[in-house]
Length: 322
Image (cartoon, rainbow, N blue to C red; front, side, top):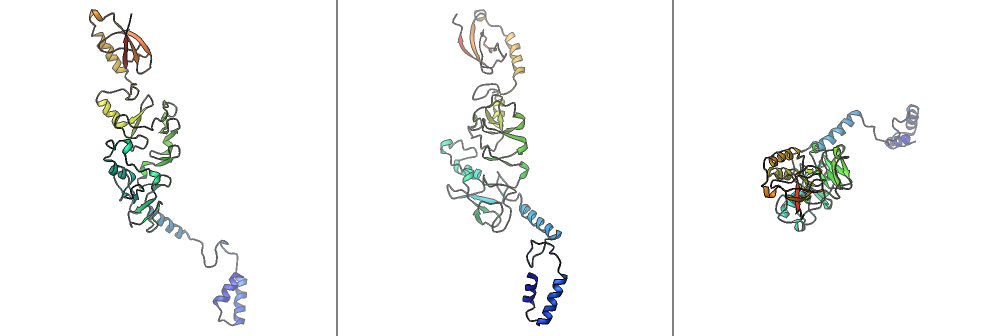
C-alpha cells in the first residue's frame, strides 16, 4: 500500500487507466523488501560506505595527533579552571603557575592552589577554539581532543603508549596497563602485580607526602618506589639518598635494600679495630631498626650488631647499669 501511495503521489498527472495499469505492474513485480527496517527512500549501507565511515572516524582520531598539548600531556584541548576562571593546557600547568614551581614545596600543602581534576567542567578545542562542556570530540569541528579520554577524571591524552586506565579504587587514571597492576585497598593505591603477595601493607601508604621532597605521592606524576618496609618515596629521591650514603627509610629507619654485604665489611672493620682495655668489658643495650629486637652487646665505637638479625642498622638505647 505504501508503494502504491507513493506511486500515486509521483504520477498525479497520469490518467486513471494508465495509473491503474502501472500499479498492477508494480504489485506483480514487487518482492519482499531487502531490509524491512529501512523506510521509503533509504538504502542499506554498502561495503564501500562502511569503509568510508571507518576512514572518517580514523581521520578524526588521528587529525592533529601529538601536535598539541604541553610538557605534561599531548592533547587537542585546554581546560578552564573553575577556581580562577583562567585557561591552562592542563591541571598540572595550572598548579605550577599558581603554586610557585613544579613541586610546589615553597607554597606548602595548606597554601597550594591546586585544581582537583574532577572539578573541570569546560574545555577549549585547540583546533577551532570552541569552548564547550567536557567531551571527547569537539562539538564544532569534530576533532578528537584525546585518543584516551576519561569522562570521570576529565582527562585527555593522545599518547596512548602510556597504557592509561581508570582505577575505580583510586578514583583516578593511572598509566602502565590495567593488566600489570592491582589495587591494594589497605595501602590505597595501585601496585605492580608482582607485589600482590609480597608487599607489606601500610594503611594509606600512598596518601602522604614524599619524605624527601614533600610532594603528595598519590597524585604525583613521577615514579614512586615501594620500600621493603611498605613506605613509599619518589624513585629519584631514593637515588639521591643513596648517593649521600643514606640507606634507611626516612620514616621508620629500616634498611631500604639488602645490606648483607655491607654488614660483612662492618664485621671485618670491627675485628680489625680492637677497643682499648678500659672499654673491652663495657656493655650497652641496642635497638635494631630492621627487626625491632633489643639486645645487650659489647660496646664498639664503629657500630653495634643485632644479635637477632645480624644487622648493624641499630641505635644505642642505654649503657648496662650493672
